[in-house]
Length: 299
Ligand code: PSU
Ligand code: MN
Figure 1 (cartoon, protein in one colour):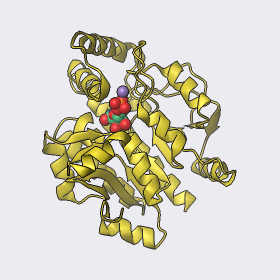
Figure 2 (cartoon, protein in one colour; figure 1 turned 90 degrees about the horizontal axis):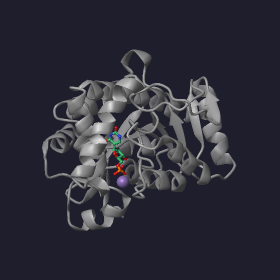
Figure 3 (cartoon, protein in one colour; figure 1 turned 180 degrees about the vertical axis):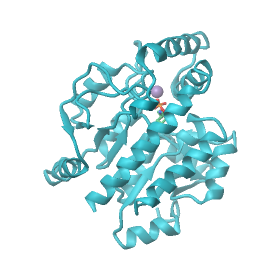
Figure 4 (tube, helix red, strand yellow; figure 1 turned 120 degrees about the vertical axis):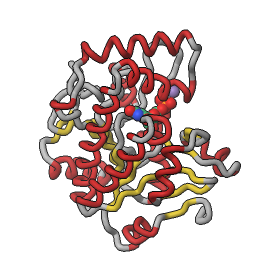
């Protein structure tokens, strides 16, 4: 295993000295945002983390190695090289053995973060149950049930079926905690009608909930939902038509499997003329800020 997992010097140092670390995913870099916004955002997220005295661990597959913590050159390579794949957990064996490079999804990043002993992970939006009846359920949800990691996100992407995503989380006993919100935020939008089972109004309370969950021996992950800052939010009525036409186009092109989410995100970006990308950047920065504070508070 040691030869497959490779830690950056900063992450290695933080692990050895029991300093707080924040895991970050890389599919958002390789398949979630256009260049150069993807590179600029990835480096900004790492800087926000360091500014809060937490070590960032962006996780990705580089030429068959699972990297926990990336160099600037590696971030740049992932942001620009179009041949880089998208790795979910099930792809790891295949892609590691074939010496491939890939962005890791929330699912794969959760598995790798847990393996490294990292407790907090910040991302933009998690995958979930897709709309319609084709049975598309993101592996992100299953990995949340399996790995003891607290994941900060801005809710599930609005391209998903939110009620069914919430039902899935309940069935699989994954806590969902609103940070300063009583209702589920929906990624680009800061609120919905879906009332959450728990709310934390400050980081101390949030960290108590996370600690207690694990002290009880409940070995799953927890989902912390942090609404996009109101000034950057896009209203439901503005984003819904863009989502609808993206979904229709995906259906016409018969898209399925791992290609669907990147296609929908890039279509919505085209239709909103980049407004969705701006919102995406704002919300992920906001999540990384909260993730860093939580990592500090958990100690
Ligand atoms: N949400 C975004 N941007 C992204 C993703 C989600 O706003 O890039 C990525 C995450 O890495 C997530 C993945 O884990 O999409 C989910 O893909 P799928 O739906 O194929 O499981
Ligand atoms: Mn899917």
